[in-house]
Image 1 (cartoon, rainbow, N blue to C red):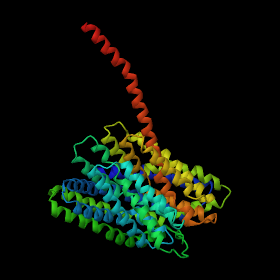
Image 2 (image 1 turned 90 degrees about the vertical axis):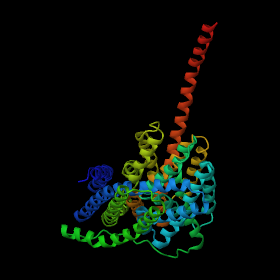
Image 3 (image 1 turned 135 degrees about the vertical axis):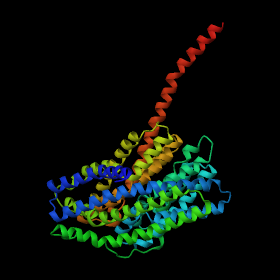
Image 4 (image 1 turned 180 degrees about the vertical axis):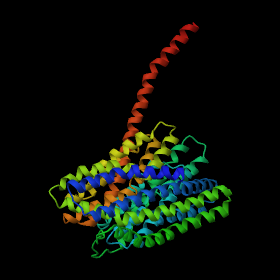
Length: 505
């Protein structure tokens, strides 16, 4: 086995294992499940682990070099119109291929999947363009974020309330394992051409701004699209009796996802071919590596989506519904927080971001500090999401104050923390959030008789919001420590100067 593939698969195993163990313990103590259901779940977990391993390696080999190459090329371009057209097209194309978005779109009951996917893709394309122009023209990230979030808050007040949680969830689900490596690398490529002192700070923020586009786009869709009376149809776990039945269910679904992923990836392959013909950037060895990366990405996505949709996500919905209907309903909040704490470690894009943060800051912000900060933030957000699903509290009471706090903090923390924080929010809400936590909330909401669109959706949004606050609080602490060190060193400097002056006399 390829050593790198083995490493990525083991990373996926260590990430998914805690959630798997939590589900199995709950099935023994609180929600007894049939052996067939557990078998479907475990096969889904196995496919998810292998799929994530292939996918992470594929994205590293293909998406990252393409993103960085395009970023460098855009920085050198003198034609702004061509930059705008190119970046918009790139943003839309990579979004359509994002597995998180496909999982989310398949669970939204009132909006056709293709309509939601293309609405979100247009939103990402527009906001990625804004993010790139911000770097090229050196506009303050905090200013751009305030303007865009002000637009979101105003729009959210006039659209139907059912659209608001879905809109915020779309923003979180868009920035997943395909888009994040690509956009992060693109940011590094854009900033690498610049030689000013703010270049490294500006390499972050592209993911944060890009994740705003889907929210605005879906809110605008809500002004014109009538959802009607479409009801949610839960995904049932197939009834199986033997191991052959289990295998048959997955094999039956495999061709559908194989075709779906092929259609999603072809535009990215076409984009790479056009870029290579125009720039001649990659040598033969690099081209071969990127092509192999595409193959790995394809295999990984097919396995991932099949495992998630057939065996993994339905158990989340069953688990949530069964617990919500029992006397253990309120235990969902601490259980949700525990799952949230481990979910961050399961997100492949988080590790990509954390590694880049440590690299760009030269170790000043370590991967372990980022992991702990994000784990605590996401644990809080999942607890709040469980509380919403049980009680029906409006998302406005959490999301609006949360973003106001995040935007206020963005004016006082060091610039680099603002970009990292808003990028962290996007990448924290990845495949594990869409594939397990959202179905869990849907199951809870359905069991207590709540409004699926208004009360269950929003968990992805909350997972995307809390890292904005958590990372910026880390930035405030970092700033206070920096000042304290400066103050402690000041008397020593003055004393040395006095001694030198006396010696001269």
